[in-house]
Length: 231
Image 1 (cartoon, helix red, strand yellow):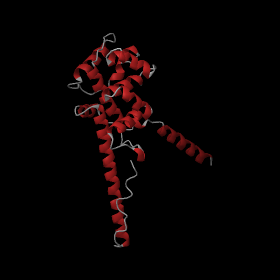
Image 2 (cartoon, helix red, strand yellow):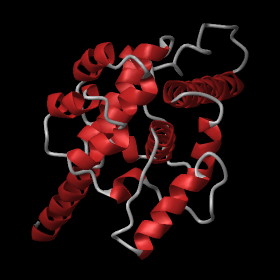
Image 3 (tube, one colour):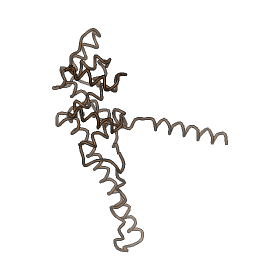
Image 4 (cartoon, one colour):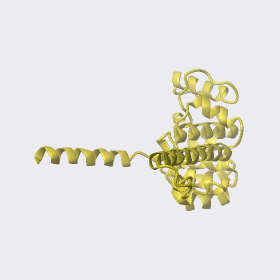
């Protein structure tokens, strides 16, 4: 009994550890269940951003009214996630006309927070930004300067890389084809559709086995209705 209790205890601890892993870092299809707003890019992006930046969907939506550009909204939430200052304080610096990188400097965002390590030098539009980082790594006193465009590219790439578990190079390629909202929702929808297809295919297989084992009793509606669980 003691041995069994130890096993059960270890299993509970393992389950608890798994439960604490952020969904945004899973690197697999991320689902919001039956309430996933798959058909609405705006709402779906708010849901994804909520999970990734650990903010409530309502908070993300409220800030989107003040920062309607999705690229800028992602940069703002990125900065907020790397500082102890309030979002209102971060936004106040932006309202003063400061570039996003300078806003980050004012609120204590470290240089490394903008970057994801890559295996080789990236091409445009990331080359200059990574060049600044290499210089800063060699000399911590080197002053990095990133434009708003570079900040948007870096955050978009980092978000796709960490949320979907793809390589930085793949995330960079995605970024070349749209803003961060397009990148994140397009990939979510692609994975969601693939999950749906797999679910329907699995049920078809099960239905074929069912008819094969029991003979042909006609179509009793066993196909295609059990694969969609609203993921």
